[in-house]
Length: 180
Image 1 (cartoon, rainbow, N blue to C red):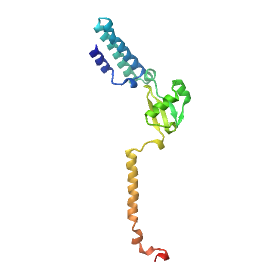
Image 2: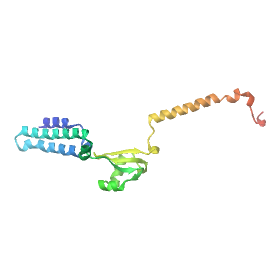
Image 3: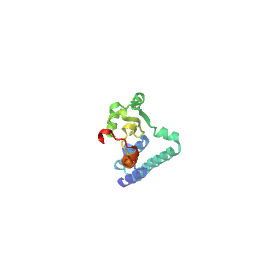
Image 4: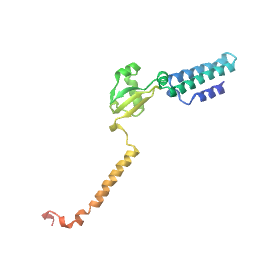
């Protein structure tokens, strides 16, 4: 039964429990309950068949969700905006029964210490928080660093060429009298 359970769950997909949708969680719990049945009863074949039906149903639901957007919305749900421009969306949070303390805990786990730094945050169907930071709060990326270094190098190159302009341009030398 353990080998059959591992094979069926492997066929069902690789998502961890925290990434599963509601339908996937129900199917996985059902498979777990069904796998226990041979201990109580004697029909191992019926148990494997029943578990297989649940896995096929799960795969069919996932396929249909990919094909039809309304089924995805119905079976999985859609992301809900809980922070917009650094402000909490309190009505949505109430509907979701999601507290500010829970939100702050999840944001801290992502390394975010201030809600005002968040441009947009969503509660995803799998329970995870998706977010985009305000421009001022975004960490410096390698791409942005290279762009800034290129600007800096261009600036210093111009300064290197101009450093001897006073010496080369003798005709317009205007030194103060007290330095002669």
